[in-house]
Length: 633
Picture: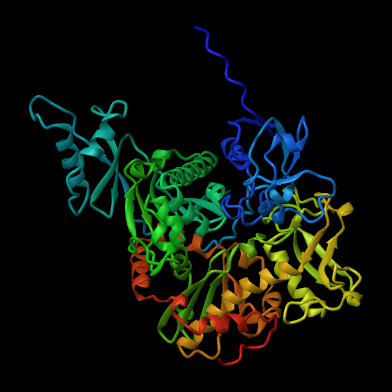
């Protein structure tokens, strides 16, 4: 019997890149992108809420035939001015036939984020691992001592403290090495002074480890020489979990909706860690077997997913982590391609929203941080705030949303070449801007959109020039020639770059809705800071330290102009770069820092904002774009 041939599956070609994907009729366009490894922004995780996955359809037939019709919900998120183009949202359009999909620059997921800044400091290495060469007696009929016994005898003779019995797993790994049973010289690696984690025939002198900072948006891996206290290489990439949404809430929701996605997200992050480690090791000429220790930090959601624990409880009251203590896992069990029995130390998580990255940043602060009143702020999708005041250490977390990373902004993009990163008003009242240069240092005069620092810079500049009022509303329509009005004659957006001068072919603007989103994110952070200060009776701060990549790119004057932090002399606001990565390296180089981070975690008092009735009133007051202090409630 001849079976009827199945009809051909629809074929989608994504541009730029000409990547072709076949999938069943009726599947979402966003699914096609995921299957083909095509990076399309999806801030809300494909739930049809944000409009960030905007694409343009150029089908062989009509665009209407290639995809399902747009529903009212999708239409409400599409650009008001389609300019004759067939725009759709990839998460809401179902495939009906062959199509070519054009991904505009502002919808591309960032593959290579800007390298996170880090601090190089002198450090005396005291690693938790040690390596030395032992002389092993050859086998003989006279002594008849098995290999394991001879190895243990050699270890005992080489160490003051007798190591524990060599684990069977370490012997099994060693037995797979060439000439394992005849080698006279053997390199032994010990963890914590007594536990044998690796045996290799011959003399191996390199003692290396990795420190990884896993952010919601990006990942950085430092390959380090543990004997010399040196950084050998730094590798950075976008977090591949962004397929499931660009904030932690989206990823928690994804696990709740589809439990199997937890292991998928874990696999994605482990594969990316392996790729970055391999890239760094090849550049430094280091073998994977010479990487014998690892430290990982991240926010609680990232740390839960990495170790394969569901982050669901983090998203519902009482917002507690599944486990709060630091954990030590074997690399092989986690799937990391370094020495199989190397330990991977994952930092503690004091609460559901204060994680190892915050503790790592605290590690970088010296004794002066604990004198007077100091504030450490990491501004991102989730803003973490730590207060050090007269021996007290307190923290809170604020749901600022992804607006500071360019999301929920009409022309928002990630920090990438072509993104406007700074805006100012010159002495003639003209609005000026500068964009992130290309990798080779050149600058294309046509921007692609606004990144997070550009949004903050723009709002601050417009407030300072009076184009924006303190309540966030634009001034009257005739106040500035670049203001544009809506149907009611009210100014509701400001044109930074007209369509003819952009790479997207569309105007790049700051809209009234953009300003409102900045106000919401700013208010959440400022209200959290104020509540933390008032809870502990702190009236004046000595310093504010800005941690993280985003904080490193903010101008202190800008954050004071819009009231992101309480009033303080601008010289007392300091950027400290990727403090989380710096702290992770400290714990890699020095075993004492791992003990210190455990003490810090126990000492930290966490303020849960959702339990404080006054937070809402403080939040409303903090929406004002002003330098003034918040009035008492």
